Image 1 (cartoon, rainbow, N blue to C red):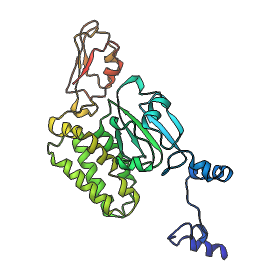
Image 2 (image 1 turned 120 degrees about the vertical axis):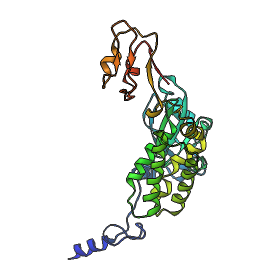
Image 3 (image 1 turned 180 degrees about the vertical axis):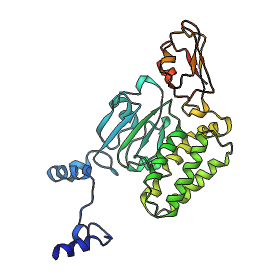
Length: 306
């Protein structure tokens, strides 16, 4: 039938969707954000649209503002706005007024932008210049308690899981990179050469992967190595996590100002805290799973971390 014929054509891999797409017909492939701009351009004209934003990146951009920022949600801003304006003027600043550390843009394959780039004017070219990208419009705000090595591991685990596995550089390369990052955050390596291995693998994956996923997957690792390389060395050489979030590097203990209220004991999932009422309590380090429940629950700031 003619329908079957069309379906048969649809099974052929289309070289260019705009010329040959669904049912063998030209297919317009764009995201919803692009389509939403089309009526405005038709109604108000190209010059009006180009009057917003920058010369190289006209118009507006919608960001999904999230992370350690007071006001989260979708924000539509003109291209060329700075990170500082988005995060502090629109977003209201960092939760609990903690120190801003970085912003991760572009989704899982984007890069991390440090504090000294807060006044960067956001457009396609400027983000690319600092090792990040516009991507899907994700904008994750990170504070002083974020471990950048663990963050790179988090995003790489996502892209590694999304790899279709067809090409070896992406399939095997991201797997090897993830193994190295897991070893670093777990404190199982003391070899500084792991940093060079991450850089080499990143270069190979970017230049030889078959599609955009592999070509951009190493970005979170490369950008954190560039701007937060000391954190990698802290983990590998000093066996410390500066942010205090990698469990294998931290230890919770009870301070002398403990009131013996028992709040920490009641929330401990493995019952590793002992002590009588109104006496300084103790944590059994052999049993502690470093979940941090005691630290979060204590209202007297009597639980320390080292």
